[in-house]
Length: 367
Ligand code: KG4
Ligand code: ZN
Image (cartoon, rainbow, N blue to C red):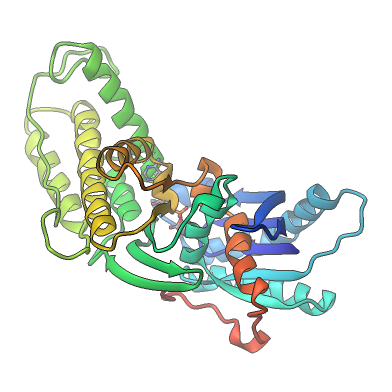
């Protein structure tokens, strides 16, 4: 089965062509093309994604992305596909409509069935793009950590989900973005904070002083930085990251009385990242044990975070050594259309297609 997948829920115009071959335990996906056109540079000066600009850029770029996706996938061969998959939500409504209407036009013109997809389901199914996907067993636990969502999902089977925990305020990625903004680091915050934290960590390990020389080579006086681990001991599986961001704000104000923001940014970035990672790991492990899951799957932009990837792998190995942990390849951690295509396969295999009019942008769609 060949799937044309389209994703425009936020600031990436993404189109992929996948070939899925059914297998005994899991289908094998061959990615024929995976085009991602990022608008990050455009939104960066605003410190976040501007929905109207995102929509305009999707309109501007989508046909070029489509042409590129087809050319890469088929070359001079006949451009055939069996189904069109498109993200319906959650996401920014103006942005979603661009992909949806484009996908509908193609499905109509090519006379092919269409499936409206959940973006978060896509993030989880990025794990089925792995060659090891045959080892994914149910029930599985999914940790979704993106710019808009932080959720723990019990996956009983394909398409059978139970939300067991979610953020009560800011998502993990949103917290990275907001903390980066208040430290004057730019957008998106996740990659910048993780880079600074990583550099600081390796410097701290190589030097005896607690908080070593900053990038300017100046010795920074020692000061202890401690941030809370919000809700780490709460009995539920919910998260809260808004207070953490506020704690960073107060800490910066306090430390700014003595030190420049440049001086305090590296240790704060590391402590903030450690806090988010600690909470995500603690809740994921506890949920995995309580629900006796057979696999843990992670998905969403924040899984691009090296510290989270490494420490989650370490913790799962130590405490749940018989449970495999899946984290998507870096290029499938951030928004892409291949993950939407992979998730769509499982709907298409059951012929769960949708009527055109049922496919509508839904900013607040749940899994
Ligand atoms: O899944 P995604 O690409 O888009 C949404 O569905 O929201 O996730 C984007 C989020 C942003 O908040 C970004 O700061 C965060 O993922 N992110 C990271 C890293 N790379 C991207 N967060 C922490 N560490 C990273 N390396
Ligand atoms: Zn996403």
